[in-house]
Amino acid sequence: MSGTSGLPQAPPPAHYNKPPRMPNSSSHTLVWMIAGAAAAIALAGIAYIALVAFAFKDHDPFELIDKPEFLSAVEPACKDLDALTDEMHAPLTPDQLNRIVAGGRAIPAALEPFTRKQLDDDYPTEDWGNDWTTLMDAVEQYATALASNKDAVYETPETPDKFSIVGRMDVANERCAVPEVIVDLDLSPPPIPTY
View 1: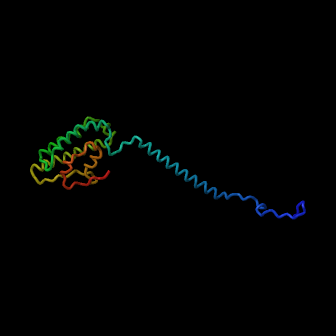
View 2: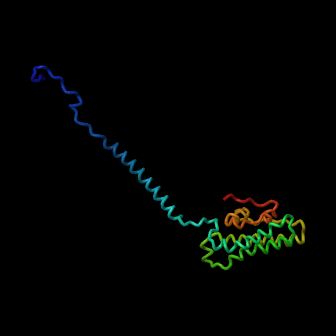
View 3: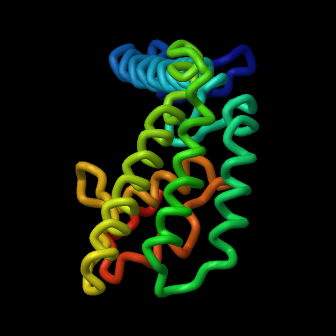
């Protein structure tokens, strides 16, 4: 190994004699598989969020009465009941209770002109009206019992899961909440759920 100048030349470095190393194709395949799976999961998540957003874009919250025509129809009866009960204080007489019943029954009566389809388009409206009827039935029964027995006890009607119907009534239409004088009739009311 001598060059043209007669001096010996050093052998080439060891890495020059080796063929270039090819990257391990199995490790690259694994990286691409993981990246592909992560991208697929991310796309599926984005698609799911978009689908839910599209499905609920016009969602009517199931617990709220939000159709203006229903709210407007019951508003006068609600205001009349509030005005009537604002002047009342416990203990209530059977006559006062019967006046409350008459005022309270005007609320579901205000929904009677609407068709089945109209009521079905705003889910809780009919149930809310039925709850007012149930509540007024209970107050009327209490008024009758109180007329003959001063120790009669009022019990607030309950939902099937043992909660006070007042809770869901007030959530459905907060502009027509059950007056406190009615709520206070029950000395040991059922619980009101948190919504």
